[in-house]
Image (cartoon, rainbow, N blue to C red; front, side, top):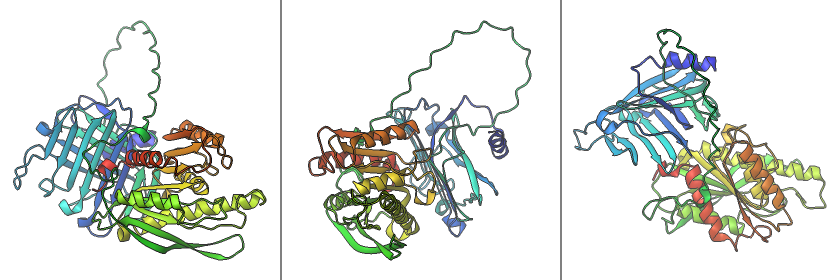
Length: 486
């Protein structure tokens, strides 16, 4: 903590005193330097549910500034001006909005520098900050700290409060001088500088105040049952595409099975036909079959991949190593454990494949989810709960139909989860799903369990509409798709 405070003071020079500094829980901090300065990009996202933050000040009138620092071996920092006023080219105001809906800054022509878009909003108890800095719009001095360790963002409304987003921990990715990224930090903190106060005489001690009771924590929003607002057709919520293009048997890797044979790993791509968006959220779908059987063309997996492709997602349905007998009753437990581990590793390979080929396939690497049925559901949860340990294969949401966690204890930086399960499932016990959800909640993660009384294993046909609707809502909120490419 002491080192963090010293770094904050070092990289955020003292400024004029403000009314207050409010802290907001971060989501994503990305600093990209792919080649030239004109292609540098900086992305900041913060999203805090059940927030007690408030919108103070009016940047439409007074403007704002944003200071971004990426800390590490070679710290990098830059302050950007977001002034009030109108564009001389278009006559449109840079800022729009009010305290009831939030404030949005747009400078599409780069009149004031490289900040293309910024947003400060509070809707439905969710406080959001978004900043997009693009070298195409003006010079960007920010570069990855190579390697980076943390970061801090100070959004300062000129006639109001400042808002601090601290990235002191979370999923960390360093790719030399090309990329620094931290996602989903575990806590909040201030980035605002503080001056040493002038000593004043000690006041006369006052009576000890009566203790104030600690308020009951606000429960997690029921995200799977909150339909995203907006006029139809709304991308990622509605079926906005009529047709889906399928590309079969794309090689995404290879791995050696328990018999010492090299298995070629294949995936099928499902994407909206004619889509022009180049940064799309992606979903990895994993079939079931007791880790011995099944295929990537499983009926419910194909239906889900097709449906979400029509909603604007990039989808893949994967094959993975299958072992004879898998996790059926007659097979040694060691074989079952090894088969589960192989499926986890192969699914993680698929996630890395999407990130490595994000430009080729038009994928937003900050918005990748995974889902599956039965063995595929177990795999999806295992990947989600291993995300904090391996940022290269991290996902931002996992969806389980008749599955539960077997590997990786839920912890900070892991993915939120949505589980569907029947109480009469005689293959993967309902109690295991309950335990998985409880462990995730105890670790501070979003986790939701939809229970079907009397239902058995993988009742997809009976509950198709509910599964698709809740999955749509869950991914929309957890992947922050309101601000995804449209």
